[in-house]
Image 1 (cartoon, rainbow over the protein chains, first blue to last red):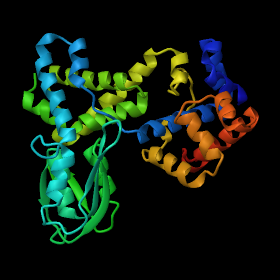
Image 2 (image 1 turned 45 degrees about the vertical axis):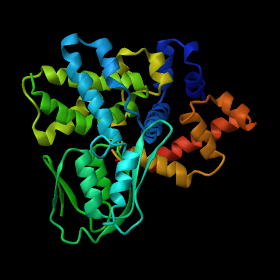
Image 3 (image 1 turned 90 degrees about the vertical axis):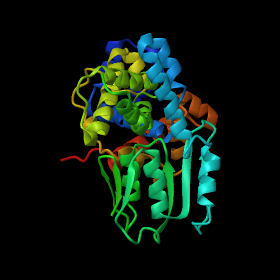
Image 4 (image 1 turned 30 degrees about the vertical axis):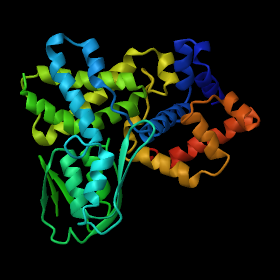
Length: 189
Length: 165
């Protein structure tokens, strides 16, 4: 087992075959390496992603005929991930909406960490308002079938780089929340 | 070729999740970006589009395949440097880890590992430090660092890993 760790710290000192033999030496070592693979993935999963200037990379790589389309899409993606309302900076727009007097709870806060990734914290915000913002961001139409949704308030941190399914899964962990994705509709049951 | 609007809709809806998945698997921002871009580029050339309720699953699968292709093309040394799965090693149970295990691993580390195990663990996996570097930083014997790290990894596997039948 110690050999595995020595190899991982200095892979350049081993041949490819030696590396394979070390990992495959017994089931315990294989399991250890496999677990380290999953732990490393979980560490990366914890870090948040910055949507970079995608169009620049794409332009360098692909044919010119398609550049215009993907450039527009990449810019649109950056706009979508950083803005909730009509191109305004998310930090301003969402706080303004949450402070429009309709929500008596603490206004939500939007944080952009040093890498530029955005989280939105809903603090004591009605479920309908949370669902509205999330549906809009993911280009879904919202259907509210629960007449209590406006009176149910939650504390929820929304990681905007997550896919919608994951966000809905997180929300459904709350008791009395049952949200469903149905094609391009987000339904609050 | 697809209508531009359909591709744009898919891009808006799924780009962030796809990029996050690619980053989780390969760890490099440029590689992850290339993989996601290639998925959309190929999609633009297709004649048939996945059904709306299956588009996320399709795109995420395409990202996974792109990531595994990248890993396979890399040499063994690069695979272990990045803690990627290593080719041609049979008998692994990687696919048996539950989908939720990534969050579960971090929750376990945050709530159940005590010091100095947790600090050593974070230094190894978050900061990619070697045993020697960790030992020097913490002023500890390298064998102690090794012992604590192995204990932590084994605990993660026992708590969160595949269940034995």
